[in-house]
Structures are given as structure tokens and as C-alpha cells.
Amino acid sequence: MKYIKICFILLIIYSVQLPAREANSENQAKNNSPFDQSKFVPDISFIADISYLSRDLSNDSYSALHIPGTYFPLGHINEDGHSHAGFNSLRGFNFNYGELSLYSIVDPYFDLFAIIHLVPEHAGLEEAYITTRKLPYGFQIKAGKFLSSFGRINEQHTHSWNFTDRPLISNLLFGDEGLNEIGGRITWVAPTNFYLMFGTEILTGDNEMSFGTASFSDPNRIIKVDEDEGPNLFIGYARSAFDIGETALLLGISYAHGSTKAEHDFSSTSGEGVAMKANSNIIGGDFTLKHSFDAVRYLSFQAEYLYRLMDGTYYTRDSMNAVNIHDLEKNQSGFYFQLIGKLGLQWRAGVRYDLINTNDAKIDGIKNSFPENLAKYSAMIEYNPTEFSRLRLQYNHDRSKYLEPNIYKPFSEIILQLNVTIGAHGAHSF
Image: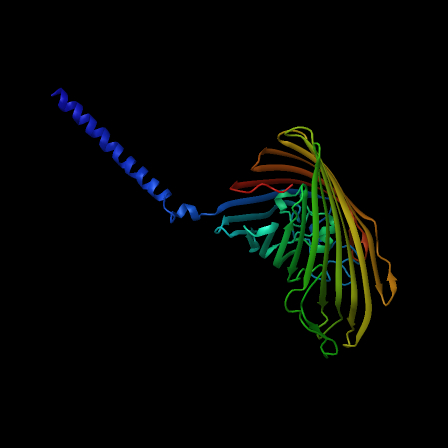
């Protein structure tokens, strides 16, 4: 009887363990299978960004702000349809964006990366591109829709910025979304004992702030400008980085050339209208210095300068549909520099200074007087409980904007921002 009880107990134990052993065997077989579905699941992450904003300016007044002479063609932000309906645009609570990120190795030859941008009103494809994995001699090709590597700040995603907003000069030349285009890129990393990279991009050139491909004509078709078909924007850049003890330096220079086509009510049959056809050239230089005191604390200085030259033709149409043609030349430039300190494992603080130092426009050789040396001052402190969450407090004092009719309107704002991430997300670049 005793042996019967022992055998009965062993039989129960074996029957309990049998399903687990079978499941384990199935998992082992699945893991060894090249067709295991888990091997094809990409890295997925989701980022949410919300903020609370206090500003000494109403929402309506803020949406009407502009920098005279800088936007198309000589007017302000309302004339070309551009607006401040971006991040932190409203007093009170803002849901700035949600970002769904997907990444996976496709095969031994390609990687695929995509970002879907989500806001309460709509969703859109921010980036989706393929990169090569094994080209010889230090070459790599990227193709799809992506943020251009022009300059320093443009290719960085919003959640990796050191401040809640884009620098003045970058926003002026490329808009709220930056230089984000469809096209291709090829880079080459030189076989040197320090980092040296050269790159070139061929892009569609649809950026509404500095380029454009759309056709236009007046109602009587006296002026008819055809749409650009094919690539319209060409970019080249070089970067170098090296270390001096505990200090790392990154240097870069960039150049962009493309055509600019845009119009406002020029094709309309009522009222007045304007249009522009020009060649645009943008030159940029950037410098980053980062000194590490230990494994946690560091001090980083970053600066970037951008200069834009537009040279072409400016068309005006009066209410009687009479068209006048003028020579146009526009020059805008500016820079920012920022100083960021990591004070401990979870705390960072920083300051930034922005300046639009050149703002010239000439019609038929006659200079139009527009304000220059327009500044903005920012300071922030942030607390990072973990690498997946960030709480940032930022103060801005903006002395660059005007209200219609060209009324100088400096303002201040305080932003409390919360940014959280879930899922697998790659490390940010230096």
C-alpha cells in the first residue's frame, strides 16, 4: 500500500510537469525555427509629450506674430498661411504630440525605420526610410522620407532637443517641422583615426519656408511658371569629431541649393496677389564641445549659424489684374548657442541665446528696411526620474516678433513639459 501511494504521488507530479515540458519543447523548437514570428517583430516605442504653458499674450495675438521681411515673399506669417500651430501653442494645457516609432533589421542588407506622428486632429508619417547595412569602403545609402542631416539641430527628433522649442533661425528657414523631405542620401566615412564623414542628399524640395515646386500663373496667364518635376533640392555636408582628453569636439559644415516657387492669391481672380520664383542657397556651420567631469556629469556647448540667400523674380498683381515684375534679393542669417550642464544622475540645466542678425530684402535694387538683431533668451531645468521620463521647466523671453501693422511685441512664457517613453528606443546621437 505504501509503494502504491508513492507511485500515485509520482504520477501526479509527472502529469503536472508534462504540459510545462511540452511547452518548453515547443518554445525551443520555435526559437530554433527560422520562421519564428517573434524574430520578425520590430522594436516598437511610443512617446507622449504634454505641457502646461503660461504666456503674457493671448492665443489670438500669439498666432498673429511674425518677423517682418523674413517669410514669403516679403510679408508676415499670416500672408503665407504659416502659423504657430505647433508645440506649446496655447495657454494652458497642450498635447504636443504622440510618436510611434518602428525599427527592424530587414535582412543582411537593409534596415527599416518609421515614425508615425500623432496629434489630436490628425496623424501623419513623419519619417519612413531604408538604410543599407553592408556597403563597402565606408559608404551608406538612405532612401525614403527623412529629416535632412543639414546642420546640427534639424535631424534631431523633438524629444531629444535640449529645449522645448526649435531655435529661431532654424524655425525661420525650415518651419515647425524642419527640413523633412522625400529623397535619397549617400554618406562616406573616411578611413581615418578620427571621425570624418561626407554626405550628399537629393531631395524633392517641398519645404514651404525656403523652397517649393508648385506652379502658378496670373488669371490672364501673362506669367506662367511650371511646376518642378523631380528633385529640386541638393544638399552636401561634412562632419568631423575627435577627442582631446575628456573633451569631445564635433564640427560640421552644410550647404543647400534649390529653387523656390510660391504664391499668395496671385492666381486668384479678385483682390491683389504676389508670387516668387527664385534660387535659394543656405550655408550652415555648427560646433559642439562636450567636457565630461566623470561618468555622470558633463558640460556641453553647442552653436549653429545659418545664412540664406534668395535671388530671383518677384511678381505682383493688382486688383485690375495688371502684373508687375521685379528683381528680388533676400538675405537672412542668424545663430544660436546653448550651454547645457548635467548636474547629477537625474538633473540637467541649460541656457540658450537666439539671434536673427541679418534681415535684408531688395526689390529692384532698393533695400527695404526690416528689423534686425532680433533676440530670444531661454533657460531650462529638467528632472529625469529614469531614462524613460523627463519633466522640464523652461522660461522664454522672446524679443523677435511683431504684430500687424509692425508693432513690436516682446513676450515671456513659462512651459512645464512632461515627456514619457515606452518600448524599445535607440540611444540619441552625441
